Image (cartoon, rainbow, N blue to C red; front, top):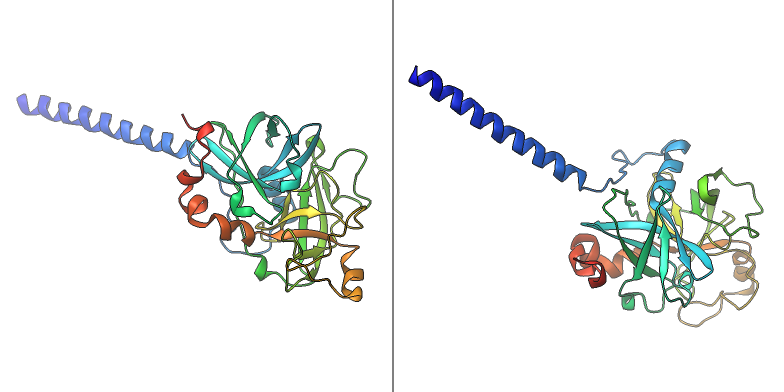
Length: 280
């Protein structure tokens, strides 16, 4: 009789421990952000590319204007997005809208690593589980490769070409191809020229390859109305023939300009990049 009671007691204890471990594992799984990974590195169906584009792109509000941004990292409840520096016009505060329509206050991260580049980081806090982008490699693309440009064009400055996809809240995906890959970057880091028709408001959005990876950050549309953006990083000028090829193209910054400057500090050891204003 004693042995029977003893074994019943052990079964209760083991069952309780098993339930606790299972519950803990489920809780930990809920805290892990979804990363949409293409394990076979194959061309994805168009509907999957659109799904990825929608899930990783946010709308960034700066004063009375807006731009776009890309979810690139999560540490605990703190998310980091990359956008263009020119999207962050001087303002008392910034906010952003996530793909589920939620509005969050955002703070500017330490962007000294991006000096000279049209790039900036924002951070916000949320206990929601948002997917983060897979950052690819722009050096793997070639002229003629198909790419998708994403973002939130401002009303009144919609693309002249027919959008490949139009979603809720004004989100658009524009289809095109790589047309120029410069050996030397233009000032502020622009180096990828493509035929996708991006417009104001799409700055900071993702340039995706057909594997669903972010290979660049949108930032400069075709036929600029002012200034001369076609100056190389070292101050030299392109030939007149090359300039003529540049003008009708949209331009993006290779994603390596982000990964090279963040490296260990945020992509592999993200604690060091969390803004102290967002930490408990």
